[in-house]
Image 1 (spheres, rainbow, N blue to C red):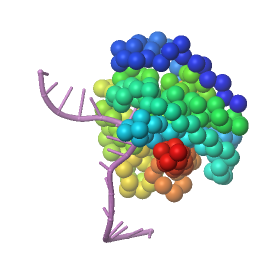
Image 2: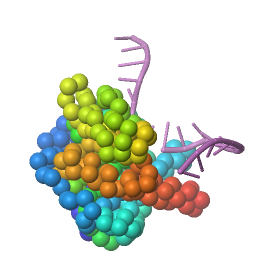
Image 3: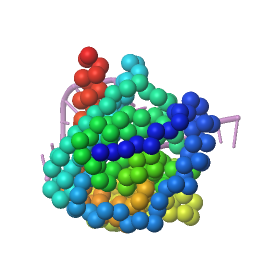
Length: 230
DNA sequence: GCGACAG
DNA sequence: ATCTTGTCGC
């Protein structure tokens, strides 16, 4: 149900990885609104690692956007393909995530990533990269501001403030719970920032983090445990 | 050169 | 990300 554009080869060095980002960044689509919140499917993806055993486990969990009920799940396990380098996270996470998405029995709809999209040193973070490779609408919801600056949003849920790279707005700090640390939302591919924030609010009725990432996080950890045991 | 740095 | 117990609070 999901067709992934397979790269010619996975980069082995940081230099190659940066070149791939420079090459693909031009394919990001930022002038589409994206699906309406509360309709269709919303899919969370996340990854867990066991560095000692060189194992990575990814999970994709499809939710009904209206009810937030789980529609489908898939996991994928493999070897860790790239070290963690700030700005190159996608090369560490994407192979397993794409495999999990391909294993889903239904269309993912909007994909919610744990990390950034446009808010990235070369404006091509994980969510944008995943979007370009799959053609799916995608957004990034991160737990930390990375290298970006922001002023604290007002304390009420729903308040936002610009996430800034210098003077350029690359995303928004979004308060999803009253008085709780905001999350950091950025557009990934085929979704605008306003809609990305609306989706994030629709996915956070009871917790700081989106229901999509919470469930994908739980599932990939379980998949990693089971892979380590076997 | 040094520090900071999504997960 | 991951290493890690109990504890405060809804």
